[in-house]
Image (tube, rainbow, N blue to C red; front, side, top):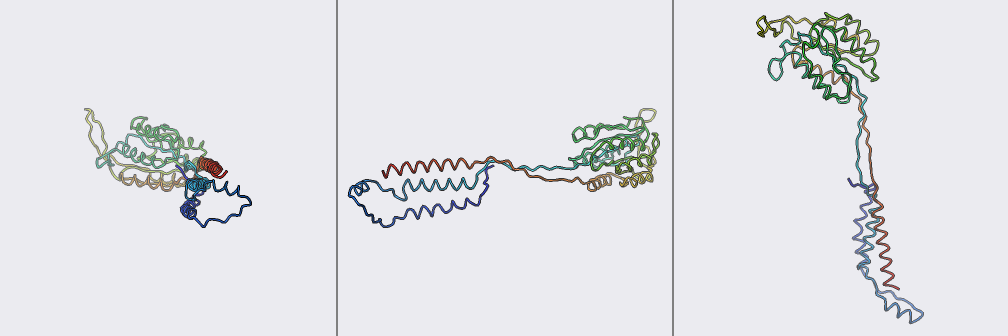
Length: 329
């Protein structure tokens, strides 16, 4: 893209037609005094340049080129760099068997809790392009599915691979928190958070949720907890002895007291998601609360071009001098 360092000087080009007009007016012939008749004869034999002739045009063109050179033409562009002080986020997702419960909907159709969580978390990831995000799955024990990364395409692939039964069944909330804390404690990010989603109560693992939360509190790691599941009973698909799948009603038991305490201890917050809409709102709210600082810097890269019109002006000036000498020896 061509621009000018001093574009205001280009207004001088508008004066050139006026200069040409003034030079084109011929005044009265000057009275000259000569001491010898030989000089008179020499002068009389010379052709007098007309102000509006080729020489006048050369001078106007030379002036135009000089003005262009002074305006500082240059070729280049301006780029914007956004530096972000990102947040390290670890997503801990329950993949126990109860996450198959069909008390949520997706596109208007009944869907399992896990399928809805994967859909909502996917949108959350897309809203955090500058943050390192990791994924931890847990059931009877924790399993690191994806370490903290900026490669969100890879993270998305790992998220899509989540399914119930990939880990022995159970709900080891305390062990999941401990594993997440162990991963985040090595991070040098200014802000480190964990978002833990479960639909049950801690019934596996060797670490109590509150004990793991104390470690998180000491290290300055914030934990948001989400209890996912309708209140009361939820439809759960099961396979009978004949291999047929049918729905049974199961009681939804979420240890909200423990989840609330874990969040409160670490400076986070507990949320309850009873349907798809509320789950989407929860992740959207967390996204707003955990903002990323962005610094915009503008960089300009230019190649100066003033030498070209300046060189052309000098060449025209030299041509004008050469022509003038030939006309007036």
